[in-house]
Image (cartoon, rainbow, N blue to C red; front, top):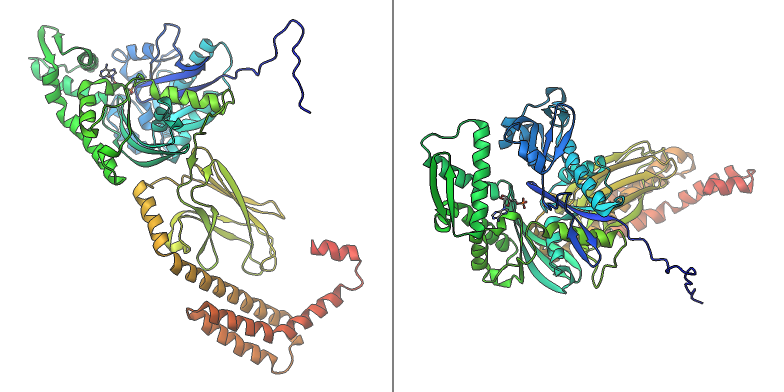
Length: 621
Ligand code: AMP
């Protein structure tokens, strides 16, 4: 019988508490935080009502840290203590960071040269994770003061191309900032979610994301609640900043005296950005800089930035070509990133795809809003609706077994997150280590699959072949990170590894791998049968040889020679291609050695006689 709820006299029926979770768009130039407020997800403002938080951090000598507008305002006067665009440094090596364009402004901490690359600031040395954590802390404070409560979790967005270490460092930064990460969500997926495209049965969506410093194009295909990334492209060094640079160069070209001091250059760059933004609203902008005065109109601007606009369209063309699609096959184009406000960009995109892009949601806010919607679902405030946004594992994941065969543990198209385990055993008597080779693909032989990683499990207690139990667990989390754990069950000895299976994988590679598995299906099955027969035969040969060594006195005259001859015939069969022949010869060897095996069994049972039944039972366990 169902229980009926009875409300407290005079009170309201208890409602499940609304849990505070936010979506965070941790951008290169600006960051935002969004949360559900009633029916809608909204961007949470700071105490001055501003939505965008510049991803800039300023460190002062008294140890204080400023983030956002206040930090950005300090950039001109104190460039070496003001850090912008730190997202570009996440997951990068010392060398890559030192060679990046913004590096010349900073002094690096040589004492940490072998660990994370860190910058010396007035408040001490800071590495990219710590700097990102400072931004995230400020966003958390902003959210908590706006929502008047403690944050329970966040969905943080990352570019689709972010690799394992970039994702891990984003998570580390969140943890350092005291934020529980519910999930890392790909930025294009978040933008599509904001437009409600995850509720449609199917469709092809292009997400065109032109931010301050980066450009990304993603082609997503939506099928029944599953977003698949079909292709991605972009340029990690193309963004609104380059459009500023084009105006900056134009301004510099127009002056008698060039701005040479760093502070003056920073100021001029800020002015260039202002002109660019004004051109999104007005056809013409008046330009005043010291004694110079002039104007810049949209047509002149279009000519200045043509190479940049062409580059973005070329990337769209390439992404479509990678997925084998035509511009006309795209159902929706989602515009993301502040720089897509430029009419010159919107027009070029509309012309290329032959349809107007979706621009009704503020392009700076779409990613955060999508993340906020997901956060609300993941924390349990809202049901997922018709579809639960899922990601799938695009290729099977497995390990290498004897005979260079692949044992699939997580099959292709399994929805993630997922965890699966399988037990394996040793091949040789006394084997104390096992090499685990993690592979990806649909084919039966290791050499036809992608090798992802190798690691070893050591310290297996010596036992007869086949007695040890090694459980191998594959776990793919919601971000696509794969952890493989191998555990010897009697001792609990463990060894593990973390891998990003999608690293270096694109839609093309996946397609090629699937196609070749279809083409070779029959041949693969034959090879598998042959290899399995070979492995089984070798195991039997090894076992008989080991038995002859330990219990040779039980052999009758001539018996060993007959076994030798049968082993020789089986070895020859192993060299051949026919699994039927191997099975036949294995069977013959088994029959020939059956008497010897029976004698051994008798002997061992006799030696156990006299021991209690309990002892025998526990020996068998
Ligand atoms: P995001 O990284 O997505 O925050 O994008 C920041 C970039 O968008 C910067 O280069 C801004 O100058 C640019 N941006 C913001 N508003 C506009 C606008 N109205 N017109 C052109 N670019 C803009």
